[in-house]
Amino acid sequence: MEFIPGGATAAKGFQAASCAAGIKKNGTADMAMLYSAVPCAAAGTFTTNIVKAAPVLWDRDIVQNSGMAQAVVINSGVANACTGQEGYESCRKTAQAAAEALKIGEDAVFVASTGVIGQQIPTDRILAGVKQMAPQLAEGTEAGAAAARAIMTTDTVPKETAVTVEIDGKTVTVGGMCKGSGMIHPNMCTMLCFVTTDAAVSGTMLQKALSGIVQDTFNMVSVDGDTSTNDTVLLMANGLAGNDEIAAENTAYEIFCAALKEVCTSLAKKIASDGEGATKLFETKVVHAENKEQAVTLSKAVITSNLTKAAIFGADANWGRILCAMGYSGAAFDPDKVDLRFESAAGQICIMENGTALPFSEEEATRILSEKEVRALVDLHQGEAEAVAWGCDLTYDYVKINADYRS
Image 1 (tube, rainbow, N blue to C red):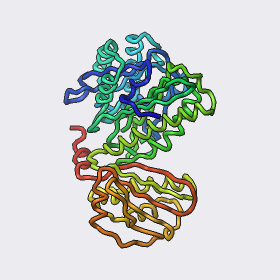
Image 2: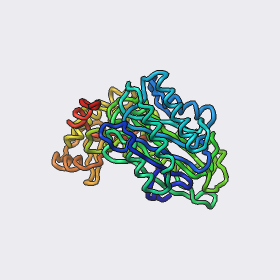
Image 3: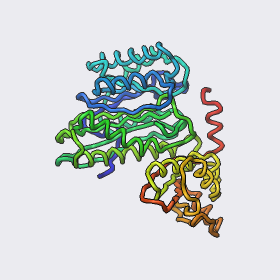
Image 4: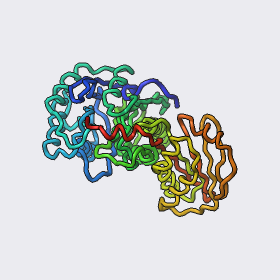
C-alpha cells in the first residue's frame, strides 16, 4: 500500500469542481461537485440522530433503493436540517439540475449539506452553483483540493488523502475528502466524507466493507459529544481500474478493505486533530481487553471526558481523570490490574501499574503531553482485544467558536 497525493479525484475517472455560490457570508467557496465518468456502485452510512437533515434522507434512499450513483453536489454554510418538505424539495431540485447538466439520472445524484441548522437553504443559489460547476469539472489533485476547501465550515484545514494497492495485477486507488471540526461524536461522528475508488466492487460488498470499517474509524472519533443531524459517509466505486469485480469475501476483498480502512482512518484522525479550537490530537488505545466491546467503550469514555480533554490541553498528567472516566463508562474491568502510560514523539512515561500510581517526573510528563499528538495507552491485562479512539483537547477557543457560530 502506498500513500499518494490527492483525495477524491485521485482514482481514475473522478472529477471535481467548486465555486462561491454566495451561501457563506464571507464570500469564500461554498459548493463542490464530484463526478464519475461512468456510473458507480454506491454505499453509505448516515447519522444515528433521530433528527436527520433532508440530504441524509435523500442519499439514504438512493443507497437503499438503487445502490448506484454518478455525482455528488455539496454545499457548506447551511445544513438544510429541520427544514421540512421545503428542504427535501430543495434536494430534489438540486439533483434535477445536476442530472440535466451532466446528462445522468436524477436518482444518480447525491446531495450533501453542512452548516447552520434550521435555516431554509437558498435553493436559487444552489441551482446557480450547479450550473456554474458542471462545465468546470476537472481531473487532478488541484480540482480535488479546491473541492475539499469548499466544503469546510469551522475547519481550519482541508482534509483529503489517497492510497494505491494492487488487486489482480491492477493498480487500484482509494481516495477521499471530508469535513468536520465541531458537533462530532461517535455514531457517525457535523461531518461529511466522500470516498471514491476505481476498484470494481459489487454494491453488496461495497456496503459491507464501508459499514464495517466505519465502526473502527469514524465511529471512534469525538470532538464535543454532539452527534450531528447531517453526518454522512458516501463511497462510490466506478470499476475503471479494471480488476475482476469483487463480489465475495476473498483475498481481493481483504486488500480493498485494508486500503479503505487506511483512508478512513487517516480522514478520521484529521477530523479529530482539527476539532474546534483544538491544539492536540488525543488518542486513547485500550489493549488486552476481554472483548472488543469493552475496549471500544473504555477508549471512547476517555477521549470524551471533558476533564481529561482539559488536562490534555494543559499538558497535565492528571491520570485520575482517565481512570474515573473508565469507571463510569459502564464497562466492567478490574481497576487493580490496569497499567497506564502517556506517549508522544517526545517519549513515553508510565504513570500507573496494577492500579497503583507510580512516582514520575512531572516535568517529563509535561514535555510528553505538550506534543501535537498525544496517546494514552491503557493495558487491562484481561484478554487479547483492543480498540483505538481519537479526540482532541478542550480549549478556550472551543467556547469562543461555538458562542458566536451563527454570526
